[in-house]
Image (cartoon, rainbow, N blue to C red):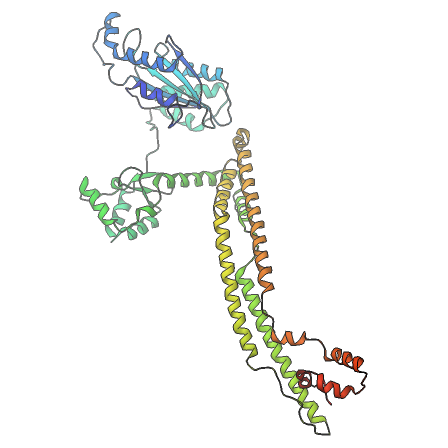
Length: 514
């Protein structure tokens, strides 16, 4: 149970409009689960707020009619008292239980005879109600004594938790400290960084060096949402204004001008938003604490790394290198084969006793392989352009990076909600379903990318230039043409016909001699 006392106000109409409608939408009421009024002659919240405002405005007249002296505190100041009660994520109280609890809380504040209304909201994961009380008594016109209201709320919450078997060690510790008259502040004091920030500011020449000096001390510079303000966020997620942590001679507007002048070289658009940055730091710390308690920190890192590993679909650089290596290897093998053929031909000619002259020379053009390499390099450059164009098209069509970022966030939420409370409230199941959806999306994107790249590679393979040496080796054998000629003419002078038909390259290789 978490009771909270908000700041007192003077406008019943404003707080009623905010609580009885959706945030930012003055015409919808979807977040309102139920309402309840007390000591009012209506169940309509808007009418109730007008009656409460009328009571506050006529407090002095009510005092006179009831015979009470008009001396003392005046009730025309801030008669609106706003409170809220929140249950835990693992608790699911019924509306009747919530109403009884709210009435008991009002009684603990001594306001059971005052006008009030209760509104229950359902827009958050935890059940909670808002209580708006009129500090002016409708029977006496006197203001309610709100002294020690936070202590009253703490004692009431402690008693409620004892009755329902709920343990809050922090509340118990604070209660014992109050018994010993020890001062307990509602919130922890923020750490003072004035010495570090002032020294860094004075030693820095510009905004970039100042940011680097703060970073070395575990502080980050960020933008404020209101006005031209710089914020400082520490490693705990606490936010403080730079001007309040800077102890220099200038004061007021001169101090602000000195800050703006020193940090004029910074690009404000590239700085993080202070509240968003602090929230990220706090969430990361909470996740680490939960992991340490459950002993799953190492498992989380391993699981996230495994989930975020990209499937190896196709490596363009590796494919280009392999293709280049194959071309170089083919050229080397072709040169070796030509050298072997020439040497074999020379040995054959020397071994012949007739001393026959050479029947031909190597008809292979010395520059044919170089021309082939030029064509191949041009073709390879064109293929690279086509692959780059495909990569750009895929990036524009499929949101892989955005989906991976969402998967990381979903995995963090999954690990954060992997607790007894998270499973009980259904948050863990929701986060798991969300993460699985992003995984399936990434699998579909990878499959589609693989299909597109495979289709492109098949198209490129069909248009690639072949090795000239391989084209020579793929020519039909001259014996096939020789047999066809002999069978057609009936002439058995095979040697004469062979000399006329045999290609020059076979005579060069030593495959035919007259």
